[in-house]
Figure 1: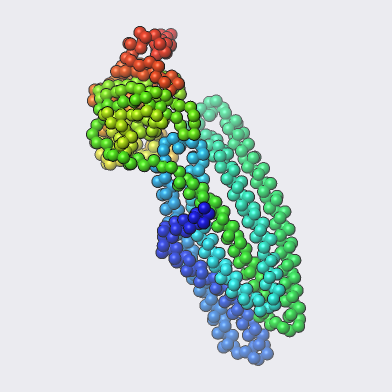
Figure 2: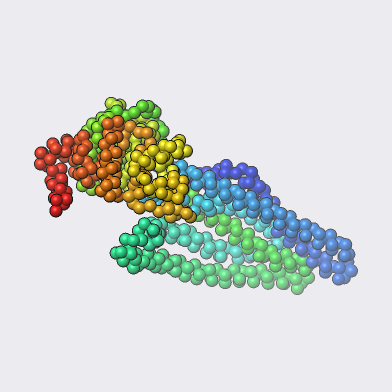
Length: 588
């Protein structure tokens, strides 16, 4: 599995930008030979200076060696410049490529996947480090190859100083690398464990900084409670971090002591040979500079291996998310024409990995020109019926028929084009008024007349008073945005519903944020639409559902009553009881 992830990551990096990837590899491998070349030229230059003091070397010869050394420095600067530029451009291309993969995958996930905390955590983990981890695998692999080249070439020079010198220097590098790698993995595991709690902490912080929630937070005065909870999560994170740092610091100190002793032993061997006249000044410089180079390359080599492993752990998170079962919204036959009838035939639904049915044996039919109202207490299954009707969910039992045909035969996207909806938790998009309305049919985003007509039908006259009318930016997320009231946002959501030329209109609590006059006007507009389309209505207000052709009463996911308002009142069942309760509230 790890090998497959490794190869797939390399493929992603290469396909993101082959030109910059090849430039990065070539520049890094070429520069890997420079440390040994610099060491050797420095040795020759020092030996030349020593010889010149005794009259055995000329000034011109020394200048020649100096020119070579300067050339190597210039070559190193040039290669580093090429490598850095190629890495930045490759990183940008790779981040864009993988972000696009993640967003495309998120766009294809079933709606119920977003209601699963584990799936959402997986999405957050995949998206959080998309800019660093994938590129890290590719760059660290190139660094590994470069470290091998540098280590081999520098090691060949140091081997000439004595058989035990290079092994001692290599051993001196290992303790620090072991500590770094061990606690790098521990740090990753700690962050992985904290994913859920970090999301909760961030949510608590977002409540304290939300422009929409600030009024309620201030009114009820629960800022101290939120701050306390936010602080508790921080304290928990800090406790884990302190334990990790204490352990890492102790082992790091021990590793430094062992490393110092081993380098000291190698230095003693070199000094003994120097005292015996067996090595030159240039040879000694090779040892002094080579120690740092070898240790740096060993560290780079071993931390690179661990770094690749750690980054592949992240990539496994990414691939697990990308491997989640997706739903192809375009799979199936294309639905053509308007929807004349909708029939639920013994439909049931249960969320994945749960045993309890949210809906059981739901059966009803609604035809063009009719309006169907769904009534019931919270959790009765009303919104679930709407999600099934609009193909956001698929039934786990029974059949949904459209114009007498099994809806599952047709692609969800083509069926959804014949439906328009306003949800109770409708979207408030930080975009222009035109975009807020036009996203219902993006092929007509530039249809200014259509937007104006939809705004008018929704009774959103306030748009005319905005600074730039339909082009006014809404919300406070971006500079110059204009915030709206809850009722105004709902008016725009209604305009969005009307903008799509659909044969099925679904209203989920369409008047929840509207005042009495606005509610009356909205319902009058809704009644005018009922003669031309199928209308589905969910509302807790009986004044809203009363005119519906048929009312379905749901209780615990089961239809307990259905019929017209007058029939249900005469029946004296649950609907009649709820209606009387609401009527008494108005009477009192």
